[in-house]
Image (cartoon, rainbow, N blue to C red; front, side, top):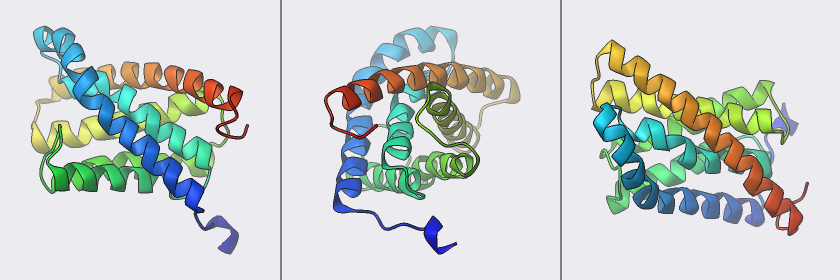
Length: 180
């Protein structure tokens, strides 16, 4: 059991913080573009754009490859959003809505490991679906049919995010920024 809990190195923490910051920095850029599509369809924009934010969470878990890395990613984003009042802030609930996807990814990481496209897509999908359900039920209080539509769009978006995460990971390995 003791081997399961490994200490984070400074490099691990910097990597998690950098990926977390990139994920937050993408929100004000991507969300308005996605809103042009999701708005007329009456789909919450976060469910359709979330896969592109959650790809960074998936990358943090896969690259650092230590238990707790995805949760730490989510907590750092939640605290930043809550304290700064950043784009997508839901007050104190932000701490929960940003850390829950990381917690779910950690649970899935117990059973699924590696750096494959499947793993990146799986992590992105479950993270985006978790975030979508949390915000749609608690903040937006969507009816069941809209929750289902949001869930389906979050799965599609998570798959796209996982695919793009695979491309980013390949580039990071190519330039020897990360090991692989």
